Amino acid sequence: MVPARAPGPELLSLAAAIRAHGFGALVVVDDGSGPEHDPLFASLAAQQGTHLLRHAVNLGKGRALKTAFHYILTELPPVQGVVTADADGQHAAADIAAVAAAIVSCVGPASPAPAVLGTRAFGPYVPLRSRLGNRLTRIIFRFVSGVQVADTQTGLRGLPLAVLPELLRLEGERYEYEMTMLTYLCRHGVRPVEVPISTIYIDGNRSSHFNPVRDSMRIYFVLARFYVSSLIAAAIDFTGFSAIAPLPSALTVPPSSSATGPTPGCSSRVESPVAARWPSARPRWPHPSGATTPRPRRCCSTPLHSPD
Image 1 (cartoon, rainbow, N blue to C red):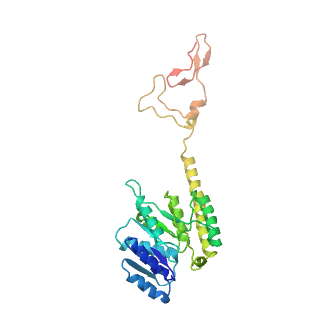
Image 2 (cartoon, one colour):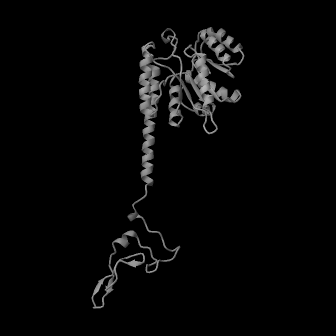
Image 3 (cartoon, rainbow, N blue to C red):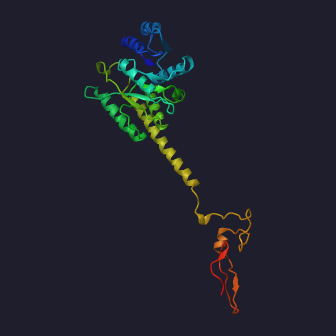
């Protein structure tokens, strides 16, 4: 599945290479590229196994992903998973096939298909803004989620079919939607499988439509919201646990003995714990000499001491 906005001719080459790897279908979403790109998309639509979906105007990468997810769920035969890739030539067809193979190989009788991330290596040849941005996002993501991910902003991802309905309900229409998906999966115990891929940047990544300021702020807002919601959930759990914690035994009312009958030597009347502990008037026990002594306190059936 490839979301595309004003793509170049490299998209045609990528589509041909993807078909050569035996994928069942290729879904391309034209996210409002404009009439000047109609010939390119017409060529794509004419290729066997390619499904072209179009937005009349630019709605964002997140909306393009949702459009494709909906189409895959409602129009295509059932598949094991979906691989998302970028249209700017950053993802090689061999790496796309490797991510798809990771989804298939991890499926077992007792384990569902995992989410897969194609992770890049950020060496000195990577543009500085991409290298610094990914490093900062990786540190913040680990802090708020507790999950170590090598490449939080990769567009090459493998998603099991079962999670697509849940992902469709998530907020986000642009680049922040990918971060929303990742935080959602990690929160629900889906730890991504990471597959190393080639790091490809063409002309310093000039063809990218990612705005370093606006889109970065949206991504960090997603992380901040995730962190705050985690704190609120922890506070609710703590409050609920404190409310249902068992009270001390000295403050609990002893069970009624009516079901089994009174214990020999004990009254069948159940007194309140306070009254039993601090009686208002202690009865006197007759003494052979004529004096009276305090009546011994009883515990169920046996007196603490016998009278003289």
